[in-house]
Length: 123
Image (cartoon, rainbow, N blue to C red; front, side, top):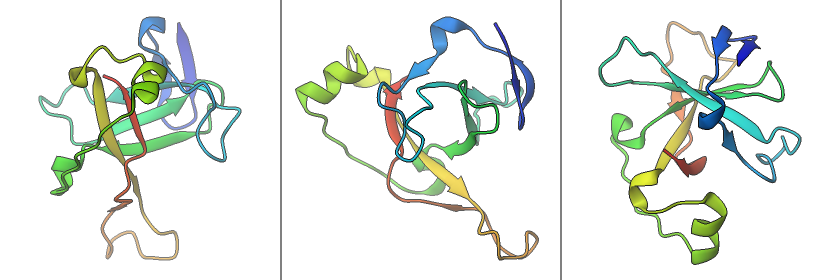
C-alpha cells in the first residue's frame, strides 16, 4: 500500500511489516499502526523513522542505543512477550527517541536522546 507522510513523502508500506501498538503510544492512544523506516542506502542505518499510519503528521526519529554508546538489558514478563507476539529475543529491538530542543540553535546543539527506551517491537 502507498502512504503519504508529511515528513517522509509518499512511501510504500508492506502491510506485513506494520507494527501495531494495541493501546497506542502514551498521549497518542488513537495512533495504533506504525511503520519503521530507515535509509536503505546505508549498510548500517544510523537513524530510523517510526511513522504513524493513522496520522501522516506523526513521525518519530529513533536510533539504536549502541549507536549512542548506551546499553540496555531489559527483561520482559511472559505477559509482555505474549502481547508483543515475540518468539524470541531476536524478534525485539529497543530504540531511543531522538529530539532537538526547539529553543536551541540548530547549528550549535546536537541531537539528544531520551535514555528510556520507547518500545520493544517485533524486529
